[in-house]
Length: 399
Image 1 (cartoon, helix red, strand yellow):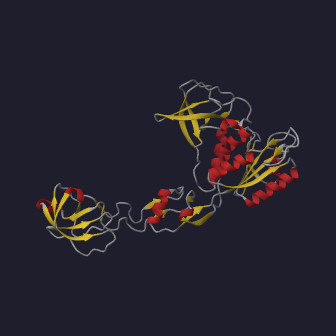
Image 2 (image 1 turned 90 degrees about the vertical axis):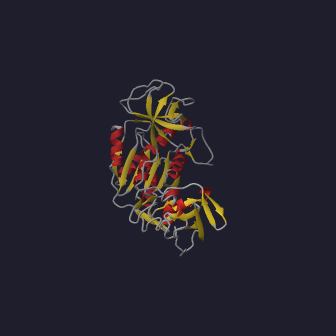
Image 3 (image 1 turned 180 degrees about the horizontal axis):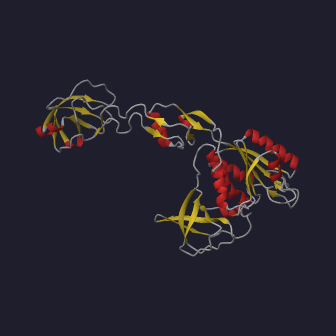
């Protein structure tokens, strides 16, 4: 089995020959990764603009103390009058500054006396005037390709009158659980050896949360022919196939054999990591298979560690889980000479993250309830040792 760092390096080094893109209406593009640079085709603002409600003046005229109000300049109007010495024009937020004016004195700084204003408090030259290109300049790259679109990017796209935008398609991820002991939702139990399948639903939820499009294929018995047909069909219809179970060394663990027989190139099989050491990743052209272990906690953690990077890679996105430094509120016992992902409770206090293990059970990799609560994954390398209270550790945040 290879070192965990080597497996991640292999995953990171995978090249995609052809990325899938499509044009979307901007409001449908939220959450997608941009596939083109967005370049400003004009200055914003294109002309000097008022930033407040007030009076457009010639700065030096403030010394006169009283100025005649020559006109009014609402936002959106095409004012033709100019500001000349001794006069001002009432101007509102967003209005173009009248020709001749170089300063905007706010309403709060003046007193109106008939058709004149009395200046109570002077302002510096250029006050409350938005200069040409203050927001952005023509030719400037405003949003770079590879950016995940959110509300702020949508606002900029709209200001540029961009209706449709080119994005990377979110990958379709087929999810299939194998195991003759598994019962799908609603399926009646006929013997005590049967258990409810949760892995396929956990993986579907993870894919849905982290920018993939899940294709739920349910559960399948340990039958090699059926598994071969299912995975082959899934490869045709999806970009990533995720299986759970059937990847270890048992007599009925057929998934690993099927992957080889379908002509897939194995990226790696077996990693010194806990949980999930029998993880297998393979590819066929620009499509991937991730074979996860069958135990629920193992499948969940390995999906977060190995499936999410592939979802991100296929749309030139970023790995979504944030790694932070945190302090231990209690000792941590290192249990294996492997890279290890341990479920922990995460709290944020006075700007620092802290972790503890209250309510977390020690046992097999089947304890999915360890993932309940305000959870993070504490990561330790195979060279790490046990930690003491107050020690700093690496934690992946799940929210």
